[in-house]
Length: 489
Image 1 (cartoon, rainbow, N blue to C red):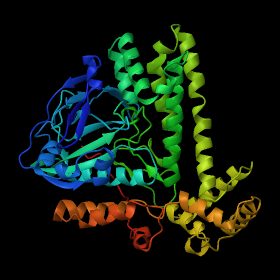
Image 2: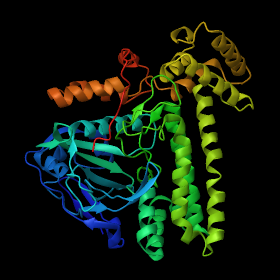
Image 3: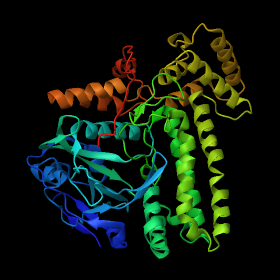
Image 4: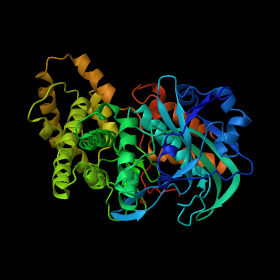
């Protein structure tokens, strides 16, 4: 049942709240003292068919703060579990509340969630609050990912709470309004498989299929089809991460969505110098979630998802395991196919030849040897300016460059078509870590949001190759201290 609020155009449904009560807890946000709207995503609000003017008013701010529950909303904290750095534990929305699901006239359904809205039964001792810096980071990176064409949760607004939270130091409190096609995770299924009944597991699976994969609902073994569809989306998603040098930082199973969207932008970052061993997260001391490990971890997480579905795949456990193993075994090939296709496009290659993989791997090996910047190397190749890379003049790169040029000659497409293909697949700009930090420092320490707003504008069209983007392509000054990111809890 839906409820339309004409003043703000909220059109909430609460289908997840109609599932078994063991899946969530009904709870209202904890009110905050003096909320202030810091940033509001007007294009996203328009796409959600919301009233922009109303949401920019005090009324909208009170909703984003959790001080006012909009008509039709039914706030819940969702339960889930997860493997955190390989160790299984009970988790849940410790500081987030799902207000409800916004329905558009196109039949689209989007979760509207407040992150940092207070303690829940799943807080595990935390205060349920969030700091301004990490919430702005999620806003910046998630919107940059969207502009890059990568499936992601998005950010509708960030408000400050007027309250101070304590981490290593005192920090300004904030709440992020996050939008997603759903917050159903691999960890959601792990939770239900471990602590609920098989019938409840079936209810969750059927609900998720109907919400995200309705085309397979009538399949003979829809749960096997379901598993295969999730594998397909994750293989495509992680390939997209690798193609732009994105490092998630904390690929726990509770941070892998069933919809195939990127979620949770805590210790994430983008790679400058190409190195598969790159790790930015302060808590990833052994490199489990390093850039080069992300495809493998994606498969590991999917195996955990398959385990949770075993009772639905077949009544005989041994046959269920075999079915699951066969499905999971396709992941690596699917990922590799997506990645190779994307790398061909980055190099302007339209067709397929057997030696393409060796050509690609050779370039990456040379980039790693000479500490080449990942994004700028492909940017230079896009405009055929090898002199703009640190690789230029080396014997290895000269040999590779000639091989690449010969490869391009063996396809029918014109040089202009090749250039356009590369422009469409090699971003001119990414959210460089030093630029993100610069924006966050200005915002948090000086309450100056102009640096962030300009960065967001530049990142909104990463394939434009505009003049104003040029300064955002420069690398950070050399530093003897490695860049580190933090979870922002």
